[in-house]
Image (cartoon, rainbow, N blue to C red; front, side, top):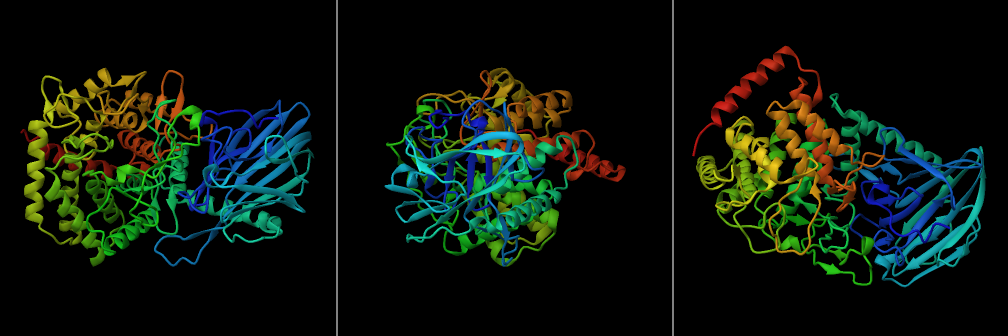
Length: 636
């Protein structure tokens, strides 16, 4: 039996979801992570974080099998095929999606709070094990699980899981309910798992009666959503898969976006850098939306901006860096000391103390996305959202001189991080553009003055001539990969000698096997971390923008070569043993796949959104590039 198998590599996991919550499915057919009723809820299956105490729901052969898997075309429906000496069987997994009332600006999707698992006999005869052992509330709740006619019922605290299963399940030594059945060619059997919070004696219902329709409806939804992708350039399949991942990170009821669907997956095996990413960082969300809009998806941006607008109108004028997906402001960080952590990496954390940090880059990330949204859609800025954007610009203008914890959320004292100053400049630059083109009201002259002051500070205090690079903080000769963002946001052209020198120094001092570390300086935490995928893609962008296209393509293909068989990537990559580390799959990483593909496509002659560029577009781009270069060559 496979239940005592220990920890799987993160690359072994697939992601399914319904834009309300998500689950990770291992290559052996085991669901080892799932939170209900939403992505930041308590985990009912958490073997991912404790191989002994955490629960699971497995469907697959007991032993001796080969496995292959893929998503069913451009969808988030997973198909896993197991081949044994006696035959083949396929397990199809999905969280069904259903169209909602469409009452918000975006396309509302309702959750059925269910997981559907279809077992199909493809050839011969195969033994299939079903093993069901939930552990509610991160394995803290007293859980009862009992077989009943038609399946099983599990209860813990005020949660219930109802398993509709045509097989008779019995308790086994692992604490699970299970059985082993024979599936022959032509068999087509549904298992339905439904989450409830009724707390009562919910009977087994015929949950599989709508399964075929739910599968067809879900496939149609995901195919239609994927078809809206406008990108036609190189690496299109990788771009589309990354977009599908990002869509699963959206929380449809509010429009919020989480950084990742997991918590406490370590940046170093056995280390303490284990954080909860199931919240909405304004920075991460802004970057994700920028990537999605770059390939034609705008409704998600409208939904998020609506969420942010409601948040600000509710009285949150002093914005936090992150929120709960329902707009909640309290994210107390706690440790789950009863859990061993992924491969013994402790502590396991829920909540995130970084919510109390000051990170000034959030203003620029959101205003940059808002500017792109207006540029692409041309919608007028209505007064309420204009107030939000004006607030962001005003805070950037007023606070850019303050120290903060920076994009990497350093947990020591605040510092004058260059990236934070840079994104405050972005905030003011985009606000000025929105004032010029969209009628955003505000102190535009004041924004221009502060923007020039930020530029002066970065160019005089942020570049170290002896180091030959822009630095992590003003006035300190410490290298940081976040300086790669300077040409990406339009602060300086990629041809600027200081930018080129920074790229060269980062390549020389912050890389391993070509992949990029965030930094190597002490950050006040014990242990270390692997290379940071987002930074590697930033290097790809810099290489492409500076005309080193062959190098850019080679690095892009090297980084995506670390993805698993389904195209999924984590936050970090250990280049030597190829391990994926950190929370998974990671929004930062997948948005960077999209943006780097777009950058390469444009460098190869494709136009906006990856279309083949017309002569008129090339002429216009040359004109704009010339203007940008002329305007960005100012010295200190």
